[in-house]
Image 1 (tube, rainbow, N blue to C red):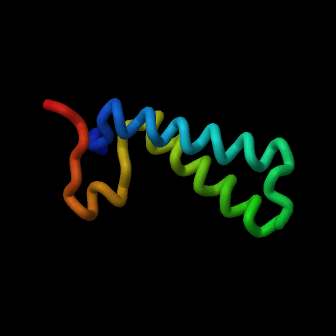
Image 2: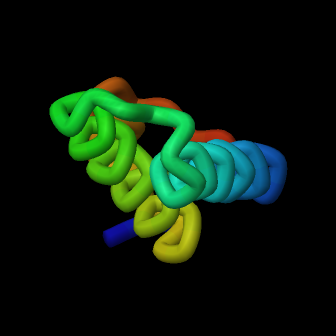
Length: 67
């Protein structure tokens, strides 16, 4: 697994994950289906930022990591 997520991209993913977690946790989202979708997206964003690897970037041959 080769790293392909740069620092700026990593920060954006973490911010998005935190915002989505907070929206669900505080009850701002009332539809249960939307809650689950937000939680899954937040979890994926958090994991990809912590691992510095995005499988979709690999498929599309995108690399935001500075060399």
